[in-house]
Amino acid sequence: MGDIFHLTGAHIDILREIGNIGAGNAATALSTLLNKKIEMAVPRVQIATFAEMMELIGGPEQVVACVYLRIEGEAPGNMFFVLPPEQAERFVRRMTGDDSFSFQGEAHELGCSALQELGNILAGSYLSALADFTQLALQPSVPALALDMIGAVLSFGLLEMSRAGDYAILIDTAIYDGRRPNESIDGHFFLLPDPESFSTIFRALGVDSG
Image (cartoon, rainbow, N blue to C red; front, side, top):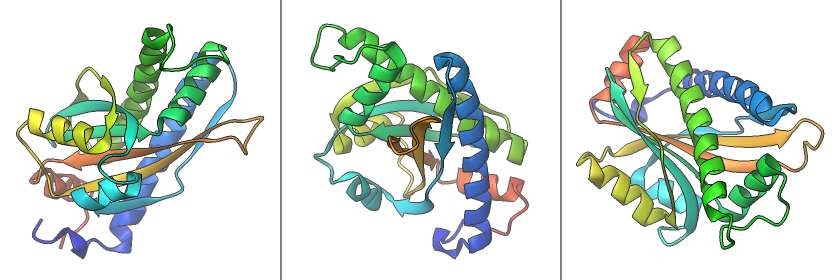
């Protein structure tokens, strides 16, 4: 893809549709896991540069909870699910029923496992939706969890694979209890295809990548 900013509204509409389907799949999986009705929304889908991505979170020194997976297959890349620590703690409290949970407490390991499962479900759901749309073979790695500054987390994840794409697909994600729609847990889902994978994905979608 010569210039990603040739992306049109049609490209974004397709990415948003993939995001909505992935959110629907993830909501179903979370509802089963938590035994309660969980709903999800995708308020925003956009393309961002690496620098813009970090600024959207609050700058490279902003501390976040992050689940990272590597995508293997016909369109390799990296996936990150990022949310503020306080939002991550809210999710763990709802998932475990422990209203006193804190990442600073003794149950830290349990909370990390719960958050890792959330990232695994979200990433798996979005990746499954992307694979269904594109008919590409895509497989996620085992997820890794980090609580650290966003600059360190993203840089480590990309340098670990010695591959750093210039752009990311950003899918904002809001998760909320069906009975408490005003108390959403808001996170950011980043898909960073390897540079050659952008063309592969849009070609598979039947869209002229410009």
